[in-house]
Structures are given as structure tokens and as C-alpha cells.
Length: 237
Image (cartoon, rainbow, N blue to C red; front, side):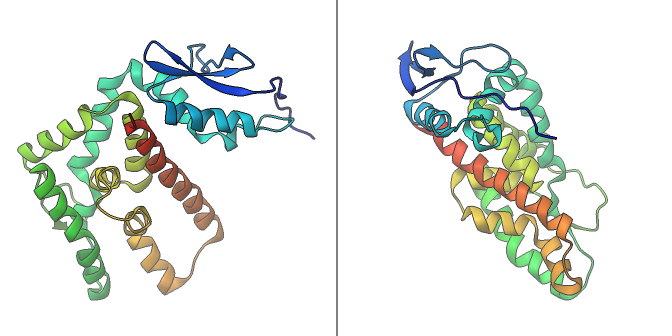
């Protein structure tokens, strides 16, 4: 059975400034979000990236090939209307950042975790005045309140477009520190992604991989990389 898809109805996708922001036009008509708001973004670089996605569509529209459009829609329709809740949800990852929970063994895995994760935590401690405590095992450990306050401040000062990117960076990796490190360009994004999967990759080395799990990991990696690119777009002037 064939799947129905909306058909392309426009010839040209263009960008236009509007009250200090930028809108995307399809043959002169502004693009709307799913909630029917005007798709209005903070800078011309993001607008051009979105317009290019629309221009690249063929006879049938493929939403999966329009990640910048999807992220901008989320920022406008969702994040902008519940910013405090989104900030709280993202910041909560810092209270149980998985980088703080270490394996009790074997020694090889302990060493890998320490080598990869200790420098990131040290970076966050210095960059944000937010030292976090590491423990063996998975039992919750309360983190210093000042550290959580300072990490939350880093989240709360972001725009709805930046928060949309941070949400995916954090949720895909499971770590607020990794998400903030990606935004800061403190490490290569590929390294950060691999470090977020350190335990999984170690298990694969020992016991082999699972095709379904690896397919899911590839989708998450693509989302993580896209979120990093979208954040950079959101920061342009």
C-alpha cells in the first residue's frame, strides 16, 4: 500500500526580513508551523537553511529531509510556550548526569570511563563553577546545590531555538554536561557522542552488536549531530 504524502505546490522558496526576524516564503506566501504560526526565525542563516530544505523537496514532500524546519517548528510551537518547563526538564539531567555514575568493574571499563568522562566533568567544574560528585553504581547521589544552580543558569539563559537544540543534545546523550560541552565546542561532537555511548560500545566489543540497537543508535546520533548544527545556526547574528 502506498503512503500518502503532500505534494510540492511551489516553485521557489525564498527568505524575507520581517520586523528584525526572517520568514520563509513559498512563491511569496509565508510558511506556517503545524500550529499555524508564521515560521519566523532569528537570523538569515537559519532562514536560508530552512528555505534550502523546502527548495530541495521533489514532487512529494519528505518531512524527514527537513530537520531544520522541524526544529524551528518545535521552538515556535512548543518551547516558546512552555520555556520554564523545558528549562526545568533539561536542567534536571544535571542532578543525575550519567557521567557521574561509574561501573564497579571490570577495571578496563572503570579506566575507560575515567579517561573519557573525568576531563568533561573537570571542564564543566571550571567553566560553570559546577563541580559534580562521581559515585560507584547507580544509586542517586545529591549534587552540590550551587553546581545545579549554576548549570540551570546556563540552560535558562538560552533562547527557544537554542533550547530546542540543547533538549536534543541532552536527551540523545543522556547528559547535561555533554550537551553543554557540545554547545560550547569544548570537544569534537563525534567524540562527545562516542563518550555518551562508552558503556554500550564496550559491551559491543566484548559480546558483539545487535542490529536493531545499532539502527536506533544511528538515528540518535543523527539527531545529536543535527542538534549541534541547529544550535550553531541559532547563535548566528
